Length: 267
Image (cartoon, helix red, strand yellow):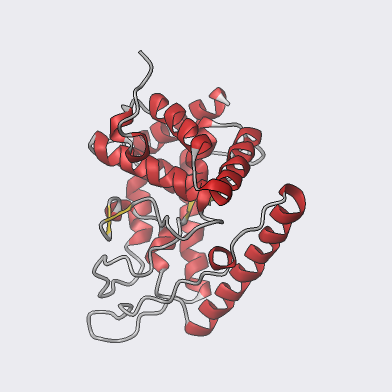
């Protein structure tokens, strides 16, 4: 597990050394600009990112004030551990309906609101079916009954998806795949071959963050225990213990992590 954290750090260093942000920006700039005003109407889920984007965002976040870093850590852990049981936690970068990492937001975020309507409806239907399967798995394997409102929640297309001339901005599947392939190529050029059994080439930001600090078995144990206790009592002792461990490793005081604020760190 320590080796995996070191590997993520190596990826962040490579991203800096090989000027990966320049390659990513080249791709991002090909996405049509719209009248989006960063009001976070469609920014609910924590987006899937390529490992290259995770490293790029991580380098950006490392330069933010500790208070902002603590906020993002807090929200990412709450989202990753609780998104299947409550709608209270949105994308971890959102604060007061503004994005703390808007400048380096990943490609998937830039596509929100730009899907053809029918394709978006099909994607939402696929998501509901996938979440229903997740719900059955947690019920059968762990005795957890996940709330339907969390499993079946849909995010509507953003209404601000028009370009400067007032025309509807749409990015079809062929163009999205072309741009995703550019990110994939930039990632390979910067990082080389990646052992996907150890680290996936694409995942949720919040899951990557958990992977830096915990083994897969530890993550599952913490997640199941957190969901069970939340549904039973609303308390979050296992989540708080995970946050303490992560804050310490990230060099953050507990006062900088909202859920830990007021708790006394060990002497």
